[in-house]
Image 1 (cartoon, rainbow, N blue to C red):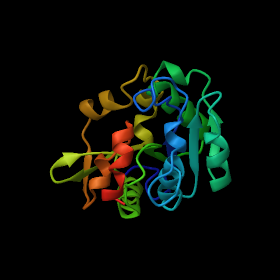
Image 2 (image 1 turned 90 degrees about the vertical axis):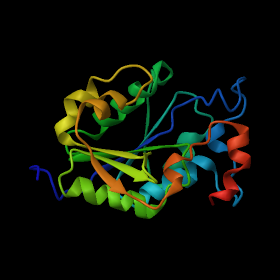
Image 3 (image 1 turned 135 degrees about the vertical axis):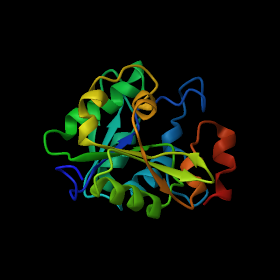
Image 4 (image 1 turned 180 degrees about the vertical axis):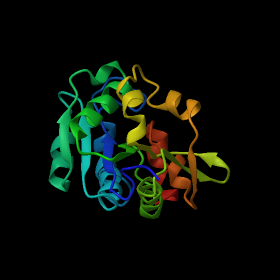
Length: 202
């Protein structure tokens, strides 16, 4: 058990990408596309995280086209990452800095993954609260997202650079595996085709 075990993690929603694979022109915001049920993609992703933790910090890029307004209306604390275009690590570091000094741990979710089940978020939260330094969901033998990090990895998280997110930390340190019955941990929406087939997971 860590000294901060038992404390609720801070949720981080990474929603600062441009979604170039979805629309290379940048004209259509992937995160503001409606899902089959009518909810906006980023709103659906945010609601699951919001239902699982007490505080969610959402990172958006400058000129986000309304993503920040949408997330703010849902109850997220929205912060703009000026250098979001340099890669996912910049957004993650920005959010973690914004969460200090009080955050005991972080549950890091992606704005384009709306089908993660609330039960998965709660299981990851529980693992962090029980002192797991890293918590990852596993379904059918494969790891997915979101991922949780304890405060012990603060320095390593703040040192991240580029577009690999926290993969290097996951490779270098032991993780606590959280078994979940949730194919949504693999379901990120990168393309129009991904959006069209998303109803199969709804």
